[in-house]
Length: 123
Length: 282
Image (cartoon, rainbow over the protein chains, first blue to last red):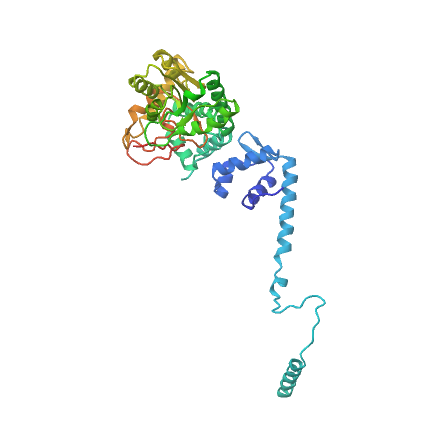
């Protein structure tokens, strides 16, 4: 089940609440306007994921299972995308796989010369 | 604007139970309407009107169904193809619902194998059509509220003095009272979706009285005039039509109670109504 990220916290509250939540508490916490909450609840009720118990919104068992799965998926996604290590490695000029490559002797000579200078100056 | 618990709960109820009525409305407009109803009777009246209104918001499919019905009724009249024209009821240059219905009728008429010489977008063009040999005029419009506009068109037609011509009016939707008015006046009129007056057509005695009092009280909080449009002409809807009807995303008829579309409060401050009405001079 794909859920709009805006409603993920709201759903998390619904799942964790045993006796359900009055709609007004969701307005107080998230400033969600009645038109938005109504269309969101209608969608969830049509799918059998929540029900109205008097004036209280309660997540059904089916809803709790679906929401947990959805929250779990979003956590995995977050972990996968949380590392920036590989993104930080930037190679200016890539060579293709199996592309012939001839190292520049001059460049290697210069690098080696530079290292020698560094070691001799340290001594 | 900040919602109270009861306001929020009422708005949520309206959005859940009557989403068709609130399709054009903003949350602010809903809150204003809820606050507009201050007494218990005003609140009760709004509840029952929202319920009645929701049954008469025509979506595209429903409108098409009634347009098809109009087309069938027109076909049953067996007008001669070469001397008949379909004309929109709009008189001046302002575009209105009559041209919309005229256009929407073209295909349903063809489906019913009903063909005519021409279509015209203005009632005033009838004179020109008559000179070209047209003798039967089918005038169409989207709504008939009180019948007064139809009467003025009919009188106009009679004033042209065509003894060799006939005229018939066809409406997508309208009020029973308006149709009776046409019948009493001898105007040949037909309507696909007929509705009773929302208050006096549905309630009697005490049930009606408290509703009338509550509606008067609500309308007393509205500006007496907006532009050139007077509230007293529109109390309980234009000519007391008491309509609760609108096509989804259509221009709300002035026959509907003004609490749903009047855009100023008594003190002149702006009001956010549930529906936007577009009207010359308003």
